[in-house]
Image (tube, rainbow, N blue to C red; front, side, top):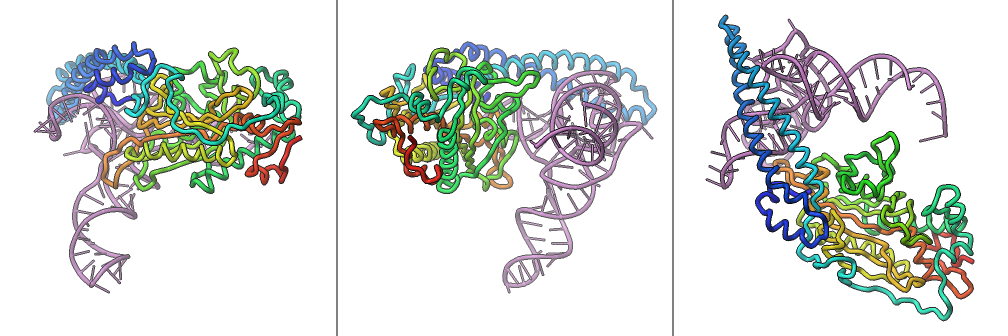
Length: 424
RNA sequence: GGAGGUAUACCCAAGUUGGCUGAAGGGAUCGGUCUUGAAAACCGACAGGGGUGUAAAAGCCCGCGGGGGUUCGAAUCCCUCUACCUCCUCCA
């Protein structure tokens, strides 16, 4: 959510900056009138309330003195009616305005490349050598099925499409990766570990920006106003919703493993095979709460922490700076990390690292105070995948495949795999 | 699932025959006196947060879990939601 006062006094500028986002900005144009009307009504109702407060103070005094208060009471009865009439109008306008504010995306940072879609994203750096194979590479779903690591068919029977059973060493590999990533971030990168709820309420989904605009992307529980989390970002960021943190408690950084659930509405037919696009997947998420002046430096370190996982796994990747048209709704700046997928002869997204500045903090009302006397300010929030586990499995299977269809286990994972060095 | 209870400021905690409580008191915190320094003691400050307004203020409005209502006026009465606690039931 943007700052209403800022939007009011910098409307043209904000509108221009949002222009390149490719979002529908029709709501934005209604802001000015509603905002004006709102302040006008507030003015009217508060004048009347001040009058009523004054009279309410006088009434007991009049009564005590034995004077007649009836005429004042009668007058205040009318004032009361006017107040409720105005407050009623005001409530409608404020609801409308609030909804509009929730529907305006974040302002891109000045360093974000301007562009329309994913073709305009800018490659920031590349790491690792793309492996060369002297045999025909197999897709990860074939490798995994042949090695009895994943059972797509039975998952389709038991649940439906876009779900998986990991079996045997497949299950073990998934679990090894979760532990490896969590250990790395907790022990080496200094994150505090968290295991969040997988189900959150509407306020939390609104706080991080999934709602109200993207409700169709979420799984909602029947008969409950609860949602399955699409990412641990939601529960972990909302951990501090409606709180004022102390300056000395910042920065806070958490790593959280969770299942993630996405309806993948609008993705029909895309990535239907394999692990790339599932309704349920595992992810290790990194979340930071920082002071505003630190957030852009933090975005770089955070991205580095995610990259470190790929470096240790020796998986080639590249980092892209997302352009204005591909930023997503809530980010001010975002890096995507893409891992090399040999069978598709391309890089595929495996992590997304974003600085939301105060956009989520304002929605979720997460603030901090500088010193004991400071005015509350909004924190800046950031998060990044560190990493999406299923996609990491896919990348390992494909990049580490051998001519005979076996898979060499990356060295750093072997302690987590019972010392095994190859899956065959 | 059944029965009952609680929800006041950073913490504890008064206040429910509606009106000098726009919120007592204590602790913590901050500032000071004393001290070589600290502790203790004593003195002082301490409702915050949001909105409106303004060049900035002042002023005004709203705040006693959230939301609605009754009333000239509500922490105090009514409705509703949420969280927590106790007992029973169930259960990993």
